[in-house]
Length: 115
Length: 113
Image (cartoon, rainbow over all chains, first blue to last red; front, side, top):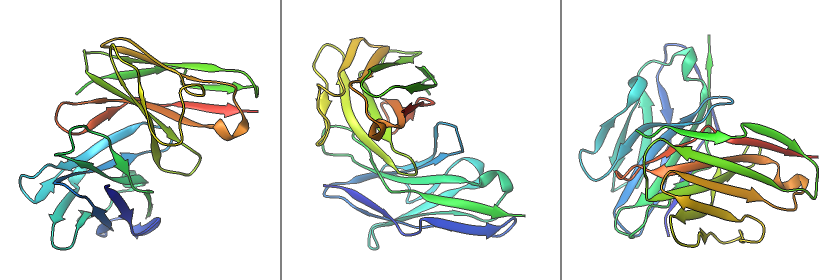
């Protein structure tokens, strides 16, 4: 069974500094990996996805993530944080070969951006 | 991407009552999903709903408590039955994009008093 571990429940950065949100996964098959963002009182928005193509994935709003199979990691990064990036971020895994598409969510990382 | 709407957006309900949440998609989709997000927590899948068949429930969720309807390819309902304060959560529906990811509705914020 697949699972996701988000290593930090809360990350705080200063505006203009890099962002790193860490995610490790466990999957029996070939995983699809996603990062979703949830702003306060808003729905979930897909930031980016990995589905066995290029290991460095670029998403919206300047975010990117690198799939590292040897480390079973899919960390989310952004070179320069903006105040509007403050939100809850979820790392999500799904198995490509398992025949259905249930998503398994990590517990989330709350990103705070300090002016 | 699909546009998904949910009704109601929020509600406050008395314990022991039931609430039906509606999910409408602007295009035909095969699979729809219902999730629960308890306060300060991550999302947990309740069930998968395919049109024309019974919903498939995840461990810990039962049809008597969370009956689901899927009458056509653009609509589904989730009922939260015999509510207790522990049912206070955000309930979200999502649809399969056909490209592995899912698109989510805005959620229904339920408070049970």
